[in-house]
Image 1 (cartoon, rainbow, N blue to C red):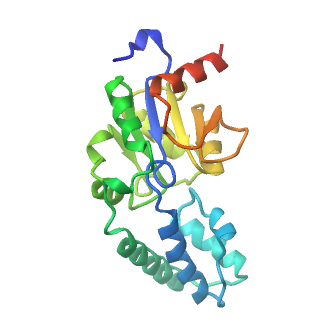
Image 2: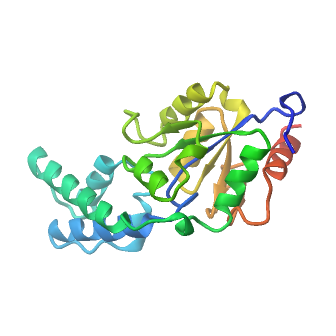
Image 3: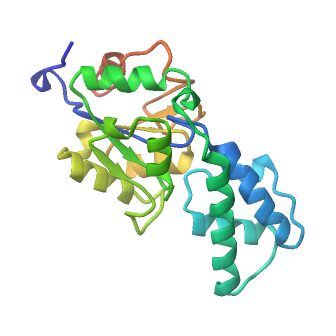
Length: 227
């Protein structure tokens, strides 16, 4: 069933990638853990890793250096950034469609069938590789990632650029995010935000996953809140 734009205010969805559509955070963690150990022998914990969610690669390294109470010149930073990315790419090279999070593919298909435009808003510079590996690149009308933006989340730039490419206003778009910085970015940009597997009161509401919910139900819940 196609939803008529005349009967709804929501016309598009923008999805974060890691932790929303596919789970690659454990790959990032393993790669960053290796890098962190090279910096003063720092043992990066999973709690530390939560600070890196939705954050650019450069900012992530800065956070790790702060945790390790270390400083590096730009040349050494650049070398570590390259090494981290190479390690991450090696880890994700075997990603496939079956690695998508439970319910994500069905929700994407249902959204398209309902006439909802789909965009991606990710901090990752490898987002397109992940989309290609999992076979869902063609589902997105707009893709904005770490190669397209200057300001990282919680700045709304990534979502505002996505809205521009989709051709809709922020208040006509729902952003799906698993990180607090991403929810903050969506809210500050004037978007509706839905949290995925996150506990926060900043989003319109939160879901454990995309299982057992339809795009129409998402839209109805947001519309009811705004009445």
